[in-house]
Image 1 (cartoon, rainbow, N blue to C red):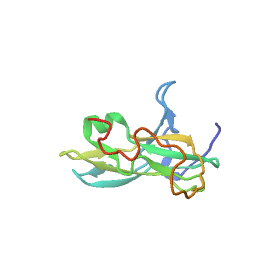
Image 2: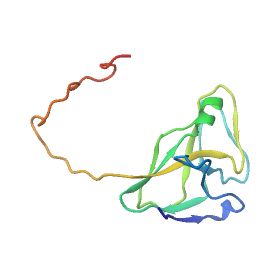
Image 3: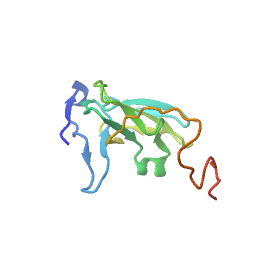
Length: 147
């Protein structure tokens, strides 16, 4: 899929989002910041990615945490996954939160999240009194299938 991308002035010198391996699902996003950003424990910061993209209709951009940042440092995308709608063409920014008990510093060019472009299905609701087909699980949730 070919997607148009614009780099903003503060992105100069950084790499375009890219896949780390041939089988990677997500492309890394980089911090397009001039000065280091401190994320104190249990605080959040909005980090600019320095790019804008034109997502095709019936697709979305999903912003997801990087597993290494989450596991090693407790840094995750707060509204995960974040959604970029196809009609948004502004700068991508990533809301990161520090769930650890230590200060974390984001530097220019750090990989801060990943983006996945995914198709979406538009639905219309059909109001019913009963479903046509019952499932085995029914309305059981929150642990109903076991621990």
